[in-house]
Length: 348
Image (cartoon, rainbow, N blue to C red; front, side, top):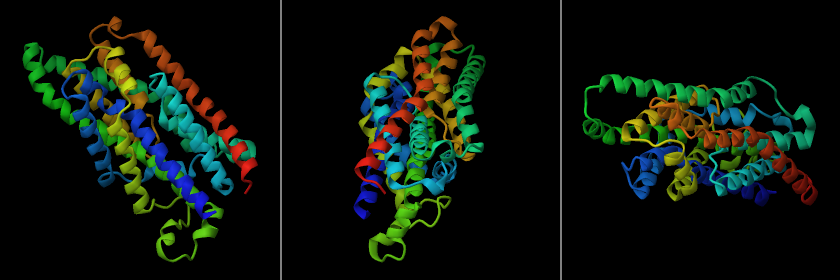
């Protein structure tokens, strides 16, 4: 059992790495698309600020994932493993096709699917966190679009008499700050979801039976309750994994986000990143596992719409929306199948 639980913890960090790999586009697409930084410099910049979120973020999102979506009494290693496999498979499918889907909602869908497979509807904790998360599917891109549009209009009014060259001179370095803000926000929300999975796993009755009263390194794996603050080693490893994933970058999605939705200049990149970063940080503060992908895509669309509606490639945006709609049910189905297979091979 010890080896099995440790293997699932490792898979959780693999998911976190894939999350950074998959969602690196959120942090760097606009700064690469506007050519403020080279792709390599951009991923290093984003990775540093993803990890820096360790020092400024609380654990509200981690607690929500660990205890706010499924009944903690039914959680076991197979359930958490199935949830992770469902999310990982969906992330890889959408990465392969270059579609910016939500790693957050893939994980939530995976949790729901595995819980349904084990206990039916009674395994789901229908309550505040579900309401907030499902509402955020619709609200986060809308709020991102409104924020991006508003910031862009504000900038246009402040700099209405400036030449385009002067505006670029101001916002090229400004975009370094906005990209850092967005990367910090990404780390503060997304890395915590993996922490929540690990805490939920280690708080399960099977894990507690194994690690309670242990000495040496095994004592660090004892978690008394799913609502506790994640152990320091979990926090450090989660932020490190997502940062390393960002370093490798998801270039297919970077291309989609950075240039195919709408063409951006540094001023537009600044507005999109700042708007998205503010929305995500607010969500993290309230413990809502919001989709960074939804939010920054909405911000980019809002910025593009300030020029003219035709500046946005609405066909591509519609394809992205369909990926959002499908993410939770698709990852739930994959997680349910994974749980049934795991339970057949290794019944607990």
